Image 1 (cartoon, rainbow, N blue to C red):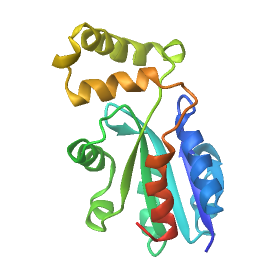
Image 2: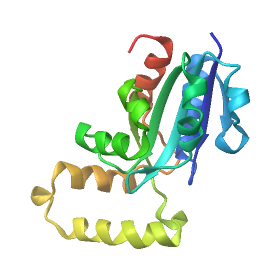
Image 3: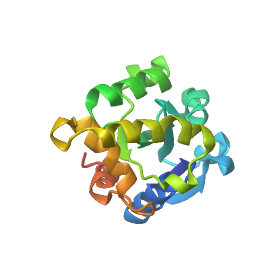
Length: 178
């Protein structure tokens, strides 16, 4: 079974997850910019990883636009970002980014926690995220929700650290044990 992992990244975390998944599954890995539908057709299993910003997944149009040609392939999608890892949040990402056919076919979507190096945030990301962080920081720890704590955690993990335990769910899906 030939497997390909494709990634679209902004700050590098999605690339790190893609490389981890490829290493664990023996897959080839390429950047979204180098992926073409013709290339994808050479593979039995295709894993796409895209970064999320305000529930929008970058690069998924490659899979969406080529979905009919990819029918019969094993397709798996993972998102990476600060979106809370709750089923309702994941469902919002699915509804906003997947086509009707992708949803109807039950295309799997895994969400993996992102990391943030606040010094490397783009102006727009900084304008959105840092004020939210500052508001949460002002709350007493006992008043912070689980979602607040998850949001703050992405700022405290080193920027090059990925959650390998979470990524193993994607690995298991590729191997057929999820």
